Length: 135
Image (cartoon, rainbow, N blue to C red; front, side, top):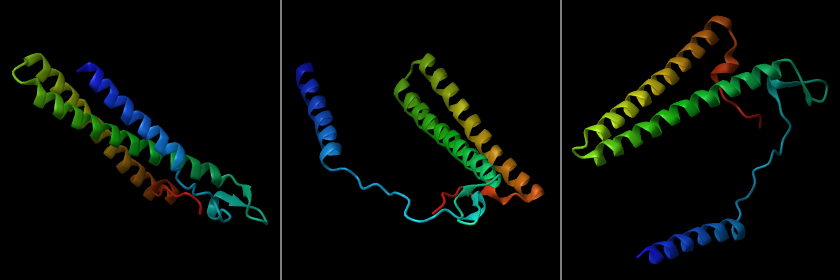
């Protein structure tokens, strides 16, 4: 039985590896010049101090998104743990603690998003509200 399971997993792994080697995905490279507040100069290709603003804004938005995603994934994992715990009280306690931490993570992520929006409204720096990749 274990050999059959090993062979099946090996087949799936090799299929995925070969698929990724022989059927590559097209790269979406930049085809136009950057614009906006991140670059300046006569040719619009020199980084400006506003580029730091764009960098910080992008980092904030990505981190907040990752925190929210991690909280959601942990909530799903905790739900499966709770369902599979059965009558095991220790398993239910661990699942409940994981679910609590996941909800706290989601609340922290949403709070950070709200704080960033309030800061953007008060300071007038709208760049932290929008994640944009120059196109």
